[in-house]
Image (cartoon, rainbow, N blue to C red; front, side, top):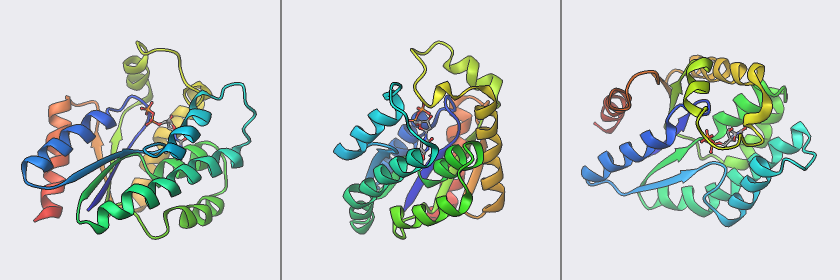
Length: 203
Ligand code: TYD
């Protein structure tokens, strides 16, 4: 089983990813955690360019290719072997993030994302994407205390408002594979909502 966690910055994805992993392990499942972009040597190098290469010129389509390249490597090195071995994979972000950040908010045409995405994931897609939905104002308040904003976080308010709308848009058009969870709730409540959904899939 393959589950991805999606949502804007500050929505609590990584916390929920860890909590779900602990719960699944307590039920005897072997769990592999990853984060997109990252989780391989190449992916970490590309992540560093994408998030901290603030001195680099990166065109919108170049940005798309870099996210796709990191993802492709993660699929081949980590996700596919784990799924073949019967493990549960929990990924902090996956292809949906490219559709939202580079496409819906960034203006790269959907067809470009569909075709490069198909090549990058080569048939490996989440059984479920958990979309943690958070209003822009709440996200800003939550991440306000964090260190320096990274290259993506510097894209401005209008961009990040579109990111939120983008996640809701893509979740709405694929309701069977996407579960939207209200991320303004407490971490415990969000965790329970996710467990309820996963229990249904496991049984
Ligand atoms: P992430 O590590 O989830 O950062 P955060 O913990 O701050 O949410 O993701 C890194 C950034 O990369 C985030 O701003 C979203 C962006 N991103 C894209 O623009 N496209 C993509 O395909 C992915 C996977 C992430």
